[in-house]
Image 1 (tube, rainbow over the protein chains, first blue to last red):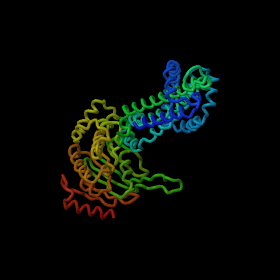
Image 2: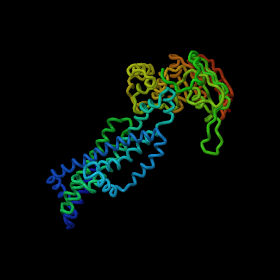
Image 3: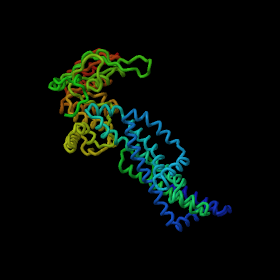
Image 4: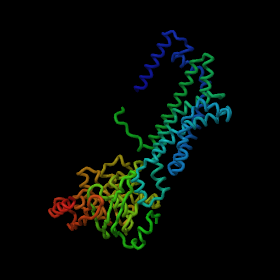
Length: 248
Length: 258
């Protein structure tokens, strides 16, 4: 509830400033103008949103599958860890605004380079917590499984996989935020459709309110994705979600 | 039979016929130093210990005298540097319950059965029956965080029993419990073992616990661990902590611990 109050106060202040300070609506549209744009341009926003949402969803899914696979490979093989982990860290220092146009030159204007960029950015935040959760499994638990005569595969299946799931969820939640930014940057490097592209087009046309509306849609989508993941986590892994102490 | 992790050298085939025997002879175990340049740590130096089928042997000693190492040797999780170990298959129960936080009590108790490839329903049935015997009816689906410390140790003990090994190695099983729960759990363990007798090797630093539960108490020296005294308890069961015979034994054991 308090988040809503803060948001309302912020919007109220913004509205008052935009109306009373005499700042041009093309420079800073008041929230009411953004709301109008949201309604008037809903068809345009929706058709661009579905493109961006698809890029984010597919990119995230690909990053999750690859990230999980790589975390398991690194966990099982010290050689893979030594060979791949430094490169993985290095991949995170790639400046996406500069790499994105290069991928677009390579793959073309379609969706592939956008998904690739989203996956590239989301990969790391998924691998690291998953790997952490895998390697934090208690050494005594490994001993216990060995004392029961468990094979390495049984220990992996019965103990390590469930133990890694909270890490995977943490990674996926972290990724949602960066996935949205990555998708917009990728679209701005060259695309025919998508909310990032829409923002880029709206500004020279003095449709600033539309650009704000597009950003708002994107934010709402990221929050929705995050909430869905958090909900899924609570439903699927109730044992790992700490009960909230004093929350109403 | 499930695959055993022990090498044949550690469990000669003939011991499987002599269910429940533990023979530890002049065992030496040294660990590589934690830091380069430091001296290697000798945990056990020429330790010998026997347990006959159905016997309860308690090993007491100061912290760091190699008690846990002894149990890992008996369970075949590590190999001795010198000496021999001739033990029937043993199941280990650690000080911490090591229950899987995502699994209910039945799933946790049935862990060893699942590893051994027992069908899911049969494993669940056996675990459920044992948990009911242990006073955990109604908690079959409860996850570890919903159980008290004493209940968790009972689930862990059910898991150890269901491993079906003739020897149980208990590593300070009640050390993490509060004093009241601990003495309750000691009485409970004595009753559970009357119902399902096994050979037990229990290490503890609690002399009273050792004397209340064991047939024989073996006192170890500080590291490197060696046997400094063996006390036969011989008091009838069920035992009372305040029994003068037990109190006198306790004083003797404490004297030997120095």
